[in-house]
Amino acid sequence: LIYPPMPERSLVVLIGPAGAGKSTLAATWPASQVLSLDALRETVSNDAGDQAATADAVAALHLLLEARMRRRLFTVVDATNVSRSAREPLVAAALRHGMLPIAVLVTTPGSVCIERQGPRPANRTVPEATVLQQRQDMIDSHRTLKAEGFAEVVFSDDLGQLLPFLERLST
Ligand code: ATP
Ligand code: MG
Image (cartoon, rainbow, N blue to C red; front, side, top):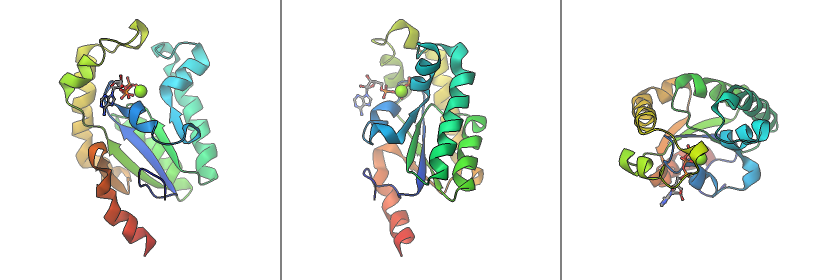
């Protein structure tokens, strides 16, 4: 078992707006198990906030994810993932290799996400309207995640919700 409790053969897809606390949660797993879109943006462009580098960073993310799923390695994707189009290739990569995609929604209040933009470096602050739109997109996503192929859908503040699922897996 992975801690926080997750099935070994799973792909955790974090979903949440900027400032929700995705990277903070992701840091509870070993760094080698986390694919961070911001980190890859920095890798390809020297600037984690360079939105023009997003397409290259996403391509790199998909390549690395495929390599890890092929090896059946537990992986966390740290990106906003609030749109279905962002999630689809992640779910597909997991299912292609018999890994369980698990959605973890980081449902921090919008006001808190916005407050957290303040102290960030200028290249990493996301405008208030964008943060609120991302949060609304996350909420709208909730009811379709199972249909998209996620094996489980849980909230980050209650990962204990996964325990019955884990018990079913091990029996
Ligand atoms: P982005 O999408 O912009 O990368 P994010 O979802 O990764 O945002 P984080 O960088 O993890 O967000 O968190 C934003 C800020 O909130 C950080 O300064 C972090 O220290 C703080 N924070 C995150 N989670 C918590 C928490 N549970 N309690 C208190 N502060 C937190
Ligand atoms: Mg982050």
